[in-house]
Image (cartoon, rainbow over all chains, first blue to last red; front, side, top):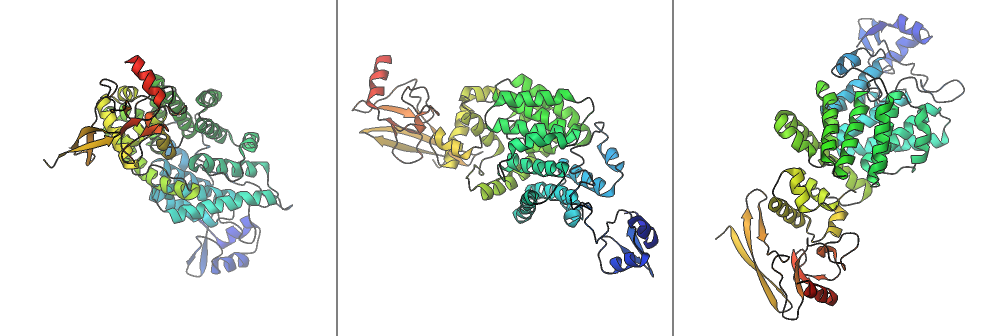
Length: 394
Length: 98
């Protein structure tokens, strides 16, 4: 942390030195330290008397970029360098906690993001809550997930009663849509508004927003529309936005699996990994592991067994937490007692793939697949596709 | 033998014996079910034996299409993977096709 003297802070914040010393003494400045008789103030400390996201006319504004890494353009392989170059400390920390999440270092992501849970700036609090929520999901800490989710829900509802800038409103809807697609939780049913508000997001966030829209189309079973969205989004930017691009490429792969075009699905998975591997960004692959329905296993198992194990382990952790959150939030029962392979087979079978097709796709014998189906039916205590459908997501 | 057991599925006056072998990987007994599409079997009253994953009958549930989801499927115990089809019409159709 970089510090300045109380006098420097006073000048920056436009107040008296005595006021800064008083705030520091009263613990109103996060991170302030006493050195003998003087105070050291963090260089990016806020004015504790004002909320920095409210302008003089009472309108909320964004003074820092929400979820900065998702919206960042950087050269693949230079993610950490890019983060270090971010000028504003809160943005830098937020980007780093996003990075920790995407590299499956969940504990670090939680620790860093929670520092900003009480930040003056609303967009920092939003980012903090979102990262905190996802990282705690992977850690299976449902109480913390619920806390963060409640914060996001309340803040989104506040927007209806508060004057906000289009940018902040757009970001609130952005977070809402992330929750909606990821956990299938509807807060205000804002898809149409979301489409309208995308224009207020930054370029990188716009790309990620397209992923969210494609995901929604996918959940509705409209794979062609989802493909249209991802392909258009991917062709629109000259700059690299690796995080958003990885998600778009993976969604494209997911759609191709569902359209039974496995060679194209593999090609897009490969493209996504080309972007992700240089910065060890394994989490998008783990997060979407189940929806990728076996192509991760086919691709990584032999080519890169170490990464495969990491993805598998992150997918397992995330999935366990996700299932708990999903079940609690939606009161729906999903198959939580299946292994990853069993789930993949159950999902494909649920989508009317025949045992023979699943066998060919997963490089297993038909007999093995029917045995797996027998195990799945046994574990779920069902004896029909209709019942299986209740346990699957889409 | 501890790693294999036989179960008799008894329905409509007919009994089908299935051997269950213990599967180390899943720690479960897995049935070696007969393939009724290869070797059709009927009860004395003409009802067709079927596996829940069998598909393609015109009277099956439109959305799911498998015997297990069909209202005409009857099994001895809930969760059984084989049973009989109680739709009299399927009896005629399949008899023609056989």
